[in-house]
Image 1: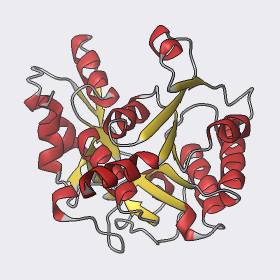
Image 2: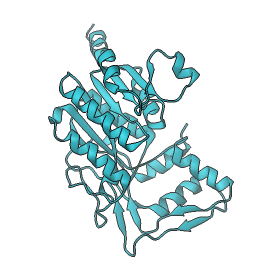
Image 3: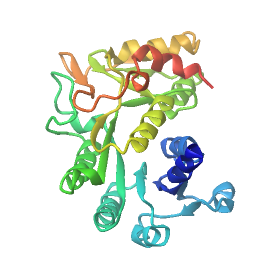
Image 4: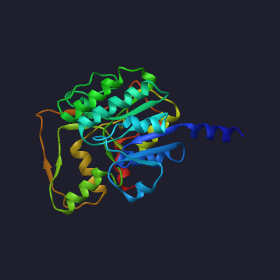
Length: 282
C-alpha cells in the first residue's frame, strides 16, 4: 500500500524537458519518462514526435515559451536546448520569470566552459566563473540570472565532455577515422569527462532528492585530452588513426569541473576509466 502511494506521489511531478529531441535531452526523457509525468519539446518536424502526445513542437526564435508553460504547468523544467544563443538567453529569462511565480524548479544544463579562462587548476562549484569563449560567456549569463533567484528554485548542472556509445563525440571520431581525416588532440589540456549513462542517473537522483544549487557532474579524476582520445580510439579498435596535435598553450591547461560542496553518493560518481569503457556499452 505504501509503495503504491509513493509511486503515485512520484508521478505527480510533471517534468518538461526543453530540447527533448536533442541527444542529451532525449536521454533524459528516456531515463525519466517511466518514473514521472514527463514531456518534451522538439523543433524540426518529425513523424515520431508529431504523433507523440507528450512532445510539443517549439521554436524558441519565434515563440514565447510562457504560452507552453501556462498550458502544461510543469513542476520541474530541464533545459537541455541547443540553438541560437540570443534566443536561448531570451527564452531562459522568460522561464526564470515563470519559475519565480509558480511552484516549479529549473535544472539548467551548463558546461565546464564557464571556467575556460582559468587554466592553472580545476574548478569547483562555487568558484568564480570567467570565460573567453562565446559559448562560455553565454552559459555564464544564464547562470548569473539563475543565481539571482532563491536557491531552491534551480539546479545548475555543469557538465564536461560527454562520451558513450552513440554520443555525437564518439560518432565524430568514427566518421573522421573512416574518412582518414586527422583527429585533433590537445596534449596540454587536462580535463575530466562523463558518460551519458551516468549523467542521466545523476540528474534522476538530483530530482528524486530535490537537490538545489550548483553541481559538477564529471569524473572524479583527470586525464590529458590526448590520452583520452587515444584510449577511446583504441577501445573502438580504430586502427591507424591520424592525430593532429594542437598546442594552444606552452603549459598544461585545466578544463575540469570537480565536485567539492555538492558531492553525489559513490555509486553515482564515475571515473575516466569507466567513461572510456562506456563507449562500448549498448
